[in-house]
Amino acid sequence: MKLSQKTKYALRALQVLARERERGPVQIATLAEREDMPRKFLEHILLELNNHGILQSKRGKGGGYQLRKRPEDVRLSEVVRLFDGPLAPTPCASERAFRPCEDCKDVDTCALRGVMREVRDATARILDNLTLADLNQRADAAVLPSGTAARRATVGR
Amino acid sequence: MKLSQKTKYALRALQVLARERERGPVQIATLAEREDMPRKFLEHILLELNNHGILQSKRGKGGGYQLRKRPEDVRLSEVVRLFDGPLAPTPCASERAFRPCEDCKDVDTCALRGVMREVRDATARILDNLTLADLNQRADAAVLPSGTAARRATVGR
DNA sequence: GATAAACTATATAGAGTTGGTAGAGATATG
DNA sequence: CATATCTCTACCAACTCTATATAGTTTATC
Image 1 (cartoon, rainbow over the protein chains, first blue to last red):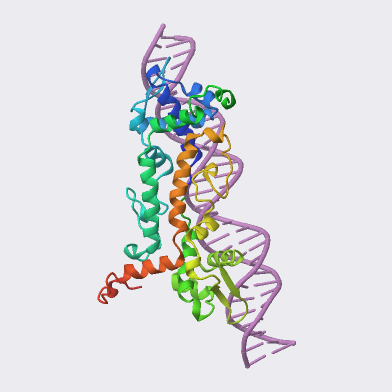
Image 2: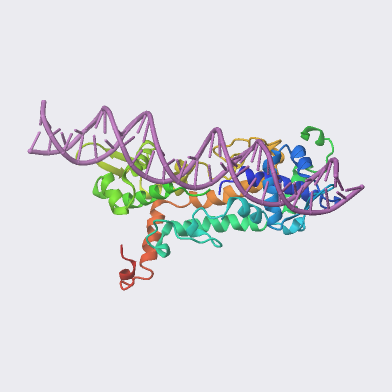
């Protein structure tokens, strides 16, 4: 499960949108500029998140994108699956997108499959139990290790 | 960490070579035919395993490849890393091949990195603790669930 | 030492994926 | 209706993956 650039951009955008959620829609251009992401590429990404029901959009003047679900209801696994496909290293080990490997003689007795299911399960356990809210919370915790304001100066940019 | 075809072939070949270890070298052609793998592609794979010290080769007539290490000393993580690279989903979460992400503002406070380290660690815990010997043992256990010979008929090929 | 078996090395090629751009179309607002 | 903004389709260059081709080099054996 190599994380694609697309997923990274998506998560960065979602982190911002989770924070801005109550303040109305954010425009693609603003988001692209603030987070330094390629604008046209970001359009695709946000559109996909919109079509998938994670974001909602408002067209025309004053429009933009807004998080549709609550941040604590958006699992990281959902985003990763959307852009990078199944979590499992092999199709035969996938829970939701099971497919036998091309040249597999017998799925039921394949030892490698068992191993890959373990890897998939471990990955899913982590990503299913973390949400956008958790991600932002961790980000805050990292920037403010123990409430010291002095540290903030070293973090910028 | 999507498992490549190359790694799958490598592991299949190694499983056979682990079993044949005491019986002298096995030729590429034999291996390719028995396991139905593309011969020329397999040559590359075995060569890489050889250069990496997992196999040893004997050239000339009557030569072939043989497992250099004991099956219980070949970790699955070693094989996966050789062909598919680092286990971590992002370079910044890799233990042995750390590299900051292209556009990362601050590696130390990146929340996603923490998550990806968890995934990497979980994957590594599994693959570091399994060896070729384990893989073959599991394969045997799957084919002979509880010592019943009758089942073997259904496994064929 | 000729021969054939077998590994070694480099180059190449086609298919698919990834990251990114272009431009026209749809729609909401004022 | 002018403008801001999202939507959609097409396209493209670079890269990776899988696999093959070709030309060696080494070794066993007769």
